[in-house]
Image (cartoon, rainbow, N blue to C red; front, side, top):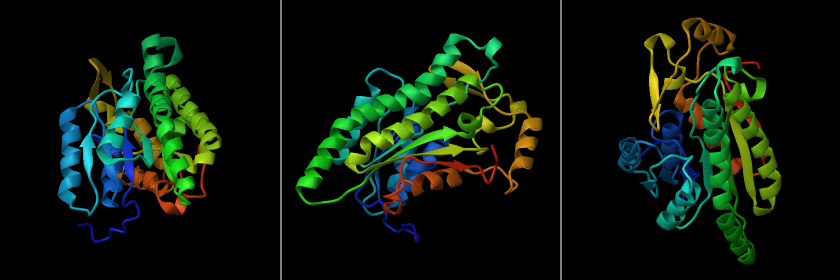
Length: 282
């Protein structure tokens, strides 16, 4: 068991989309390391299974994990994702909308498929998951009020500094991530009556396969589409030079920021967007 275990999330049930690798994987591991039961999601069932195995092997008291494989953009996925948590663990306390990827182009070279892919994965998918969760959250809150209990639930949406300040070559991605901020601030106002804290983290330059060296000619496969990812050495060097801490962030550091919004200490923080970028200015 983790010697630094505080049990701050003991008894909590968490959904983490896109948690088979990268930042999402670290979020799932972090929440579980503090006692949460986690529904792990990825397109690749093998990757999701590996995360579940890692959670179980960690041996943290109360932490459990199951897999909900599939694309967050599928019709009906939101209902299936939420139902997996409710059926497996009997509740729902934390939703982390992490799934996403980049598919970059300048506007004159962008096509509708690229545009809608970014909107669908970064905005429509979280909307559907949250909409599917609403009846359960409302019902749980009503029972808690009736029983004289006070409980807070957490939604953490993932944005980006591109969504706050824009980024050349990322029109669709930036627009979608800006939309995540609007969604966060609106849902904060709608769900405050249920004692739900709704916040967002906007990542800066975090080391993942999406921000690796473009010279490696890395590609990701998203539902049969081969998409080139990576950042040129020139841009990587420029970004690093602009970060006061002098380096990109790690997936573990990104996950720690998400965790902060899931803790009881954040019960009076809602509608906020925190930039996780090592001091990088927009």
